[in-house]
Image 1 (cartoon, one colour):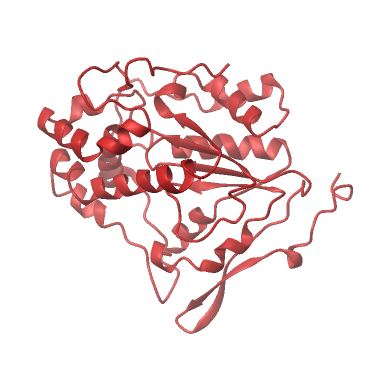
Image 2 (tube, one colour):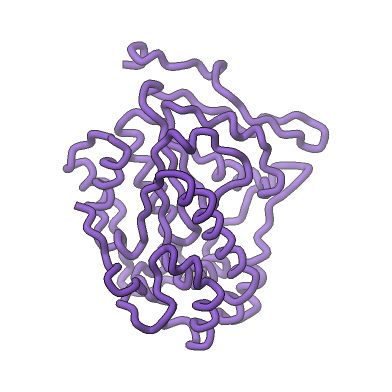
Length: 302
């Protein structure tokens, strides 16, 4: 099979080189793929939207069809490369065939040249729930970035903040601006310009079997339903009670109502209004249990 599809050698594949305190260092080399004939795919998400769940699902789906899953953003995090220092030449690793590129929690500063050609998906979630989840993640469970570079290092200033203020002050702080910026960039620079399949956390979290099958169908991957169902069952984890120190703290939509003061929710509704309404989240009290606007509840993925 590998010979049939002409697998490229590692020497032919692009690398990302970084000037680390005067020394040229290879940060990443694109690994070979088993199916260089298949179109590449792109997977985007918001932080704390189920992004890790989506990554794990896509790794298994892409492996089944022979595509190599690549998360260069994950590599940068493990090395400790901040956003401002991500090399522009990262664009070179995005090939039109053979790969599934994921791990994006925001639209990066470097170009992704295959955006106009590759099929893409974007996963979002009610920003109020994302902010609550971010607070607990920073305070208790989020892993620390790597520190293997001499010239730069990535830090998590939100961790100290989350451990020193209450949740209402935290979600109204700089993190709210960060989340709004991420949503705005996705709205204006991704959704407005490219054909992106949008998924909302609230629509898929209780319906993983249909979601996984729909992901495979969107990318044109012929994967048996028993296989997609098996992948869905593997990741269908819902804790019996809230576990604040775990990555999967609690799964249910609308948790912000239990955690945030009404005044905080009202402030977030105003601050995030444009992005919430664009992605289908109500900013008033006429909502369902998942925060969806009337008439925009769980979608049929069958």
